[in-house]
Each structure stands twice: as C-alpha cells, then as structure tokens.
Length: 220
Image (cartoon, rainbow, N blue to C red; front, side, top):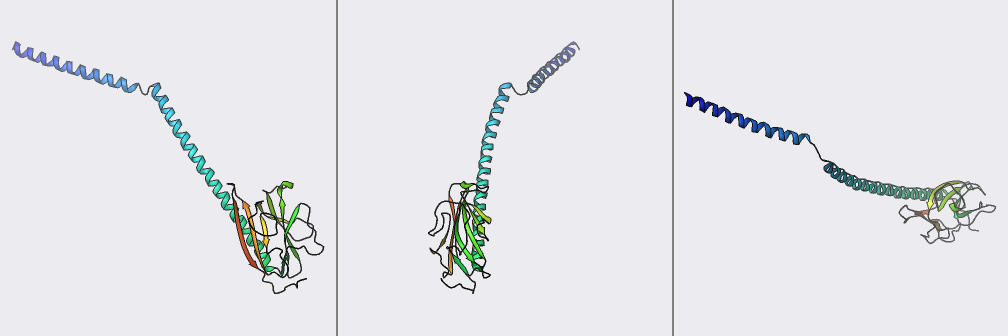
C-alpha cells in the first residue's frame, strides 16, 4: 500500500514539473512576441521603403514627361497639317496664286508676305509670317497669319513655326511656297511648313495643290 502511494506521489510530481516547464516556455514566447520590432528594424524598414518610393517616383515622373512630350509633338504635327490643308483649300478656291502683291496692297509692319490669292470675286487673301520676337502672345519663333484686307494682320492660323529652312521656296524660313517666283500663270503650288517640336527637332509638312477655278487671270 505504501509503495503504491509513493508511486502515485512521484507520478504527480513528474506531471507538475512538466506543466511548469511548459508554462515557462509559453510565457517566454509570449514576452518575445509582445516586444514587436526593434528601433533598428524600423529604421531599416523606413530606409528600404524610402529608396523604393524614390525610384518609383522618378520612374513615374519620367513616364509622365515622356507622355507629355509625345502629346505635344503629336499636337504640333496635327496643327501643321491642319494649317497646310486650310491653305490648300484656299488655293483651290482661288483663280490666281502669286508671290507678288496686288496693286495698292500694303503689308503691315513687321509682317513678311508669303502668298497672295485672288478669289473668283476678285477679293484678296494674303498669308504672312510674323516673328514673335517683335512682340506676340503666340508661341514662336514665327506665326502664320491670314489677312483679307490691306494693311491688316488678319487672324493667326498656326504658331510655333520654325525659323529653319526646310524647303526651297521664296518665302521666309519655316513657311515657303514654290515655284519661285509664283506667278499668276502657275496653276500648281507647293506648300512647305516647318514647325518646332518640344524635343528640339523640327516637323516638315509639304503639300502640292492645284488651283481649280476656271476663272484664270491673264498673265500680265
């Protein structure tokens, strides 16, 4: 009986010791988990995150700048093409295209005459270039204007026209017509328009158009 009692007591003692060790291990693990990140770990995490954000931000800015430049280049090409098509339509409707001014026609100061059109009703349309260095709210270096009255600037048609010669005509650099000189007997006109792009290059748009009016003015 005594031996059985002793065995029971020893068994209980062993179980209590095991339970104590398990509780101590659990307490140690819980304390470690409650401590969280150390200051060094937080600083390292912040540095890594900052580096990542810097690289990501730089890449995003580069992409946005490239996108804006591409949009500006496409927009300039579109504007140049529209201007050339508009002038071409004007020429088709004319009975005379010439680089010589009609009698009594005066070009306003600081404007360079490029092309004169005489319409079937004998009205005159003139195309000028204006150097923005002389004062203009439009983007330079040159602006093309369309005038319907003598000694008036008329209305701007397209800006950001280059000073670079891109064609072989008699007009100012950036906007030229040929043949040179263009006379009332010429029925075909070659237009050339050069625009400045944001990346420092130029865009060249050319077009050849034929006068369609049957009312042809006799050559003087």
